[in-house]
Length: 122
Image (tube, rainbow, N blue to C red; front, side, top):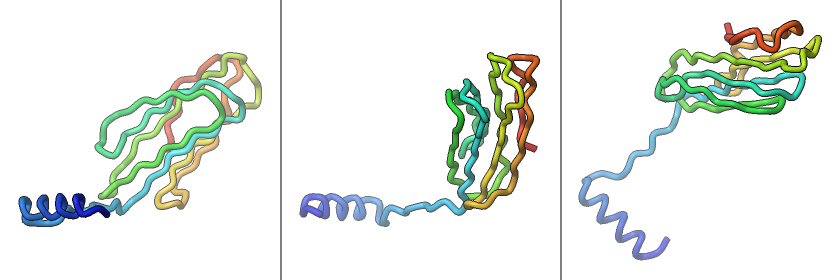
């Protein structure tokens, strides 16, 4: 580390009268989606701050890691587009807590409609 950086950090410490505190997450939550065919999906979940988020992806898999300081419920649902009305297709939704599966659900997708609505991990 350069002398200038060290001097700057010491100056910051003298102003705040304390060192910067690093907050480490206690809990890692990973949300995973796996679809048996390549398609367009929307993911709905609550983020680290508890805000409702919707993300889109095209493909077969999606995942998101959330880093929480305190344990709380994470809402998680998926909207799958089966625009080709493919038969015998599946959706697997998984929630991992500190790298261990706590919830997993395999859903058989409807081949008579392009979409069946939002699938919620229960």
